Image (cartoon, rainbow, N blue to C red):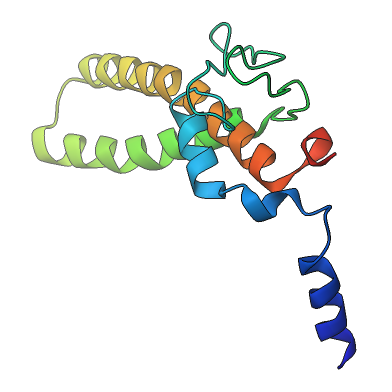
Length: 138
């Protein structure tokens, strides 16, 4: 048995692999819905962006998360990549007045950002929980 196979075999039989029974996709979808990544029914957030310390349903500890700037970065990335091509298409097709164009896209960017930010934060917390990152692994 070579070295890589031994390492892989020892990892599979280890009891310290929490991600083995934590489905990443399911946890991220639960987080997107702003639900606990463990049970899927308890609320993940207690306010717009504040994550509960403990799930009120399954008592899973959630204070370990380290989402930090990730949700804001992803929100800017998604909004920018969605709105920039749309802005170009609207301008080339209809040639609206600049103030009208600015107003519509400013409101659209703010609305899309406010919609995506808590959902992306929940998805990142779900990802961290599923992968055992930070304090979720212990």
